[in-house]
Image 1 (cartoon, rainbow, N blue to C red):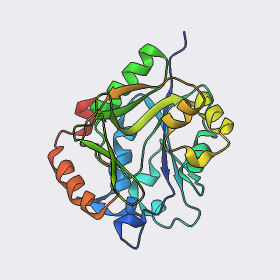
Image 2: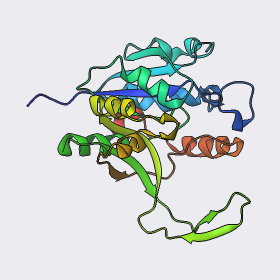
Image 3: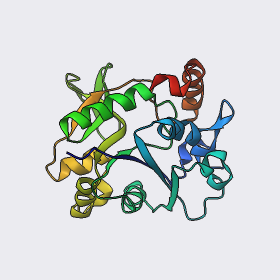
Image 4: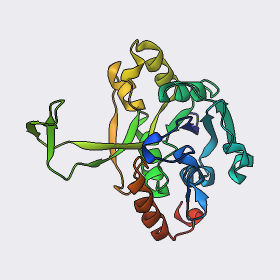
Length: 234
């Protein structure tokens, strides 16, 4: 049996207006590195990952200025209007039999321990999987006026994370089959909508996505605590 090959896709064509800055949030600095550099570095350092494909906006003027942009594992493609378009454009340049980890550009706190757990599961099970962590708080569902409709049972309820790992052909086929692609919120949702199976691998809750301004401070706190050198954790 041939060895499984892994690559990574980083959709990074978004603007991220909710953070309230003049530049896309992935280019904001935390601890002297941009968010996207923090997000990409663990994958570039991983010995089992062959290539990292980053989808950027057509008019992106920041990525090429980063030192990381010259890394031999890294390839840049033009992204699209929606996240799913950027992911599809990146997937399209990779071999169809490749296994692909799709990771958000604005998740700078991903740890190699979680990447390794995900890869180890897929190598054994040969099926798609994603990182997530269990919902701990009481969950409420409201109407459009923010009036509570019900308390949602949190048993077996999860916060979805990235990376999410699938065989490239499976993910490409799923995206093409889905007519209303705006319904695709992440890669797992695409697989779900075409009847595919996705396993949850429990990940770290500090793998946060920078969405609001306050997330920057929390990400900085977490990153300041990650003192173990990258190569020693593999």
